[in-house]
Image (cartoon, rainbow, N blue to C red; front, side, top):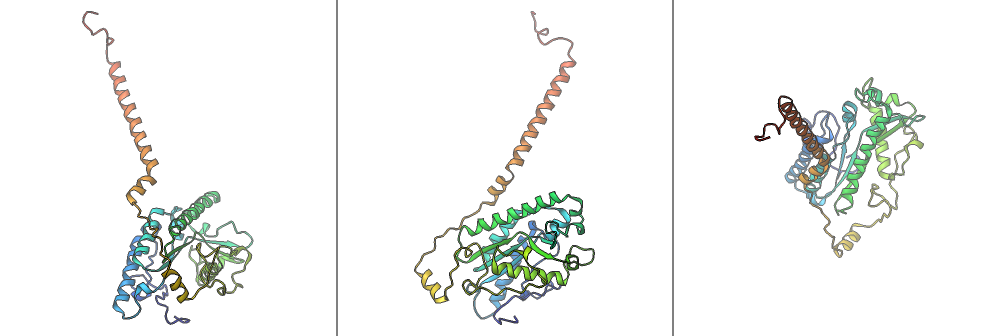
Length: 318
């Protein structure tokens, strides 16, 4: 709002989402996890449509919405959980269908390290669950977050939607010479300085793309990057290799004569859930069959022990 009066949806991040004005468009809930984001997505779509229906101006279909989804720190900290990818997929699908033009930035757990020791996450000793597991286990869980997020990014962007893009940042990496000063005392939460470092890292990462190497910079001395004149956009998988700058009139002229192929894919979530848990279903079936065989075998064996004659001795004439 300070730099561009046309921007809408500023959020101060103070107070619960149901107490904040709806025009702040902040629907984040404290303690949210990846498996319950769908309700927040529905609420955001509802608020966006209500706001633009009540105002007489540019319709929502002619605006672009930039959405930041920050999730995972509390989930990882308290439960050592991996991300619930099916739920995240449904959340992104809801946003795609409910918002005409959107860029989604999906951000995973924070990873705070010391400049001289960047493999050790200082979040670990502050968390009730992470403090109990070895570093190798933590790295395995973080790898699951990375793989799951990148899978979602590839899954949505390969369909080449004209007005929907997903950018995933599996870890929000903050490196500092004095990282302990970025946390609230004895808690796994960033203080004001920590949030400032996180915001700077996020902006510079969006502007420069995946080549932004936090291990070679000092965030306290780093400046906010300016967009490149050759590519004044957030760097996504679509414009990373080939970024073309064009005016609105040029864009309309090109795409008015180029029909876009409809590459949308309808997802059968029931079938996908069955495929995701197929191994579990097979394991249960094998277990039940094994239990049945042992149970029936035990019954017949015990019954046989009670017999005083062999089975052929009971036949007449023998």
